[in-house]
Amino acid sequence: MQCLAGPIHSLAFSPNGKFLASGATDGRVLLWDIGHGLMVGELKGHTDTIYSLRFSRDGEILASGECCKFLYTFPSSD
Image (cartoon, rainbow, N blue to C red; front, side, top):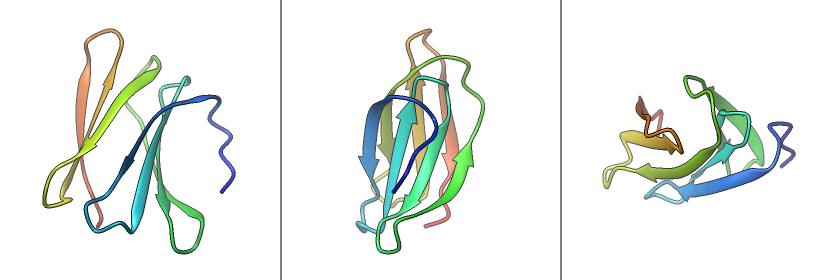
């Protein structure tokens, strides 16, 4: 898996283990299909480094947080 989003500061695995979310210094959250090693989504909205990522227990929602106290939630395509 190759990421062009800059240094990674946070990672989260989906509850079913099929996906990995990565948060980078450029504010992008990338969603990866672990089994195929492919990026399957890019979530935009942040303008600063992503320091935290968390999937909901059912894997339906991915929450991301940056240093400036912004929190975004995204529906997951699990």
